[in-house]
Image (cartoon, rainbow, N blue to C red):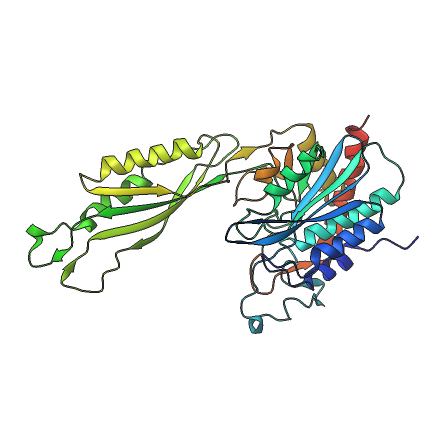
Length: 388
């Protein structure tokens, strides 16, 4: 029987696939073939939506019993930007200074590679009670419409029930294993227009300057704070991301002011209750000015996997390998865990996130190997403690 490939070998193969969302570049077929050769039932599934390109996804399962433990992640990456700014070709997977360089090394082809290598070593040890699955998408860095959310529905419709899941997103701050994400804040985008009446600056009595209402509205959006947070989440936060009058003339009172904002919100809010609170604040502060407030649809809702046996198990696996006990966190942005939480308890654990989405993204070789050992240790513990 051939030796199982290392996390490094798998990561290098994946980085060499130019899988900038929504392109796959051969990444998921490579994983399908690798897992199939090891005895997984693996299938590629493409999903599409109106006015959006089709996206390739991978589902693979070893075994048929319960519990069914899943690794989840994505092989799509953000664009590298100007390749000339990189020390090495961002898709060459070069090794230098004890690190693996390339787009996706941390976010998150390295995490996927660590999970696959760990799974291959684990099943090579012999029979175990239960199943081991992979849910890998090519749409996490994009609109997240044709990826994990549809892959989960597809799997559940086929009776592929999940019991627990680790998502290999880069979660660590300064050292491998220092942070596990056991929840995420929600995200809500809003757009507000303050309407006035255009006119000549010399005749303000026959115009209405919407900029006069801007300052009190901005103040109302930001103060008082939306909440003070709770034991599991930091306070919700609203950030105005753009203000646009669109007026190039010095002698014209503009007809409207447009602004956009994003709120990262904790589990004290739903998108509906948050939108209602923002609307209340705008109406109270606008001083009679006409406003139009709209919110984008969101599939990013705050969630929490309560600390307990599963989070303890993953933390213990980290400590077994690194000697450090990770902190549980709900900070940072969104991830596909927000979809998986509807199917089973989920946590995120991956590499250090210092270079994600940056020029010269890279991961220390020791961290890549250690993460794979953490995942393997988590599998050892999981099927010893949760099976049977």
